[in-house]
Image 1 (tube, rainbow, N blue to C red):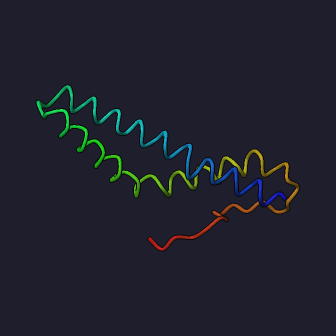
Image 2 (cartoon, rainbow, N blue to C red):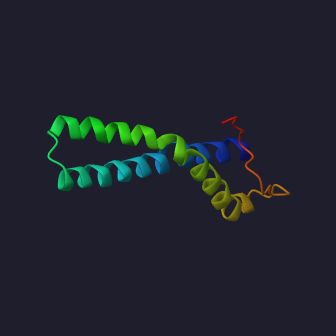
Amino acid sequence: MHAVFDTLLWQGLASVAIPGFTINRICWAFSSALRKTTSLPSPMRKWTTTAVGLGAIPFIIKPIDRSVDFMMNKTVRQYYHIVPIEDKIVHHTRND
């Protein structure tokens, strides 16, 4: 049961909430900068902002995954009574 809760919490944070918020803020900042510094038409600004948001994904994955692992190791995973708490990323490995 601990594994189910841990997986749901980790996936909710590392795959949904934090990346969604991060990409939203990157797009907002880029869109604001384009609006203030260029005279591109609105559709071009929207598509450019979308491309920047999608392009940011490969750069935010590992830092978010590691941050969520660190945060969970220091908080909720201490209450599972699973010994020992691993210091490495325990959910998956990527070859990128």
